[in-house]
Length: 319
Image (tube, rainbow, N blue to C red; front, top):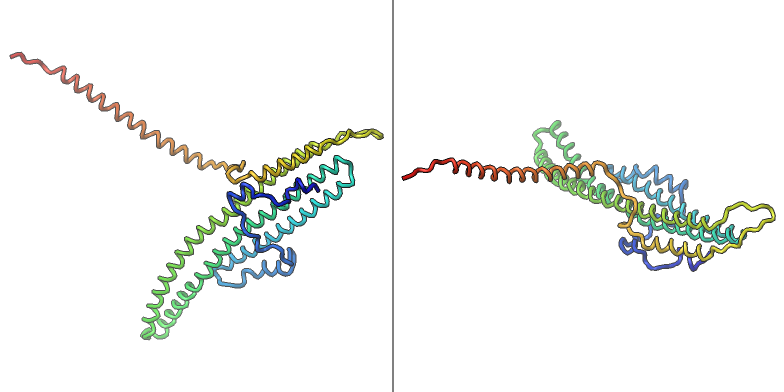
């Protein structure tokens, strides 16, 4: 490959990385067991069987997301090897095929690099969801204590209503309920803030990954325009290939476009119908007060005219 124009070389941070610094490498990378292995099946099937009852469902989600990340890593590694093999295959072909496949290999290799970046950012989403799971696990003991005290009180009321322990247990239950209310409120607040942050990580990473893939695909199609696919008759020779500089420039343009991309420059924007309706209603409400003010301004003028007419009709008394 032409390492000089390779997107794999070390380079200065891109505009997107300056705006949103990359996270640390994913904690799921470089593990021995992959999809279909013993560890994969164990995590998937046993995740919901351990830990506090409150956090088991979210614990299952966290483990499944770890499997997702490892599957994505496998795809990135396979794509990287495929890009290298494409360049190796093209090396023994004609000049145009050799150069084009070499440069296409560079672009496809860069896709695997973007996959690695996507995995690191996606892992931030998983770790944030994991923090919600940990908070749920810390709330479970207060729930268990409150339920245990309620059971003891019910048992004593049935077996020994006059027991002196009953009053002590009821006081403990009041304190446990107060502690539980505080813990539940904190869980509710933290769950919402963490959930929003987690999926912002995920959706921002998806937007960046998708738009950069679209950029690479666009430059890849431009690269294919340099390949002459017109049929030739037996014995006829194709014109000499002269697209080396153009193919290098396409790689450089692709690198520049990827480096300069930021989340603010994303091309795909959501269109929400309910928001437009909401804005229309707001505009109508703003127009109504203006009309009322105009009517109020007209009323004093009419009142002044009536007073003037009444003043003119008063008879003049001659002394």
